Image 1 (tube, one colour):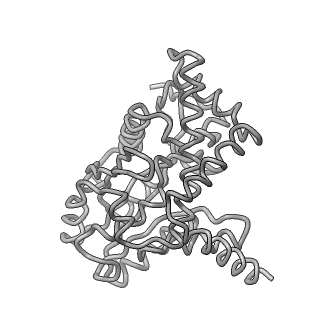
Image 2 (cartoon, helix red, strand yellow):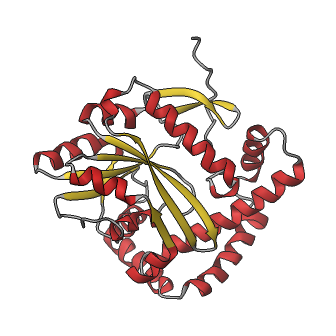
Length: 300
């Protein structure tokens, strides 16, 4: 039955994904009305997040920013669906990668890389990075992403299909260290994306810093793993220039994370992410209950 649910889901959504993006954006317009006006999905949470993170902004600004966020969120849904049926040429024309020579250099030197990115723009489209690198998956390097498995197995399997569309591998959060060590044992360099802007799960190690005007706990497991494996680290700065048009700029954070004091890399990531959000607030995932568990800054 689980396999049947997956195949029905993939067939039906795959047929929808064959529609051109301009048509799918009409669906996005409908989804916006449904999510924002009818269901009112987490609107109170979004307004609360915006009011605390931007105390100097007035209610009119928060309302306009919230509406723009929900329009972006609806676009994200149909754009992710489109990954089930999109050509390499079309995705290459819609997302630009700047600074990928940084990753190419590290890979050429035999260095594995931790890529810090976030829920900004369309993070699922970022898996198309393999179309822009000097070496393709399997050519001495594997491109990977860390994910949290979904409870619905059919949807989880479908999302894994989507995320592997351009040849990358998906590693479950609780197995990522083991999987990266296995790649190393096989003589493979790895470039792995970590979505480190999520609310920490119970028991996750954290670093607390000021982020968007409030004390915030950031997952520090990415940094610990990078230190343990001697990885380099980069940050992906995302911009949305127009509907279905994105730019990701790759910035080096550290050639060798192991050489940094613990906590510094996580704070660097938080500072870079804050700059990304402040430049264009609606492109971040404001429906995420990021501050569900309030924290205090440590006493120095």
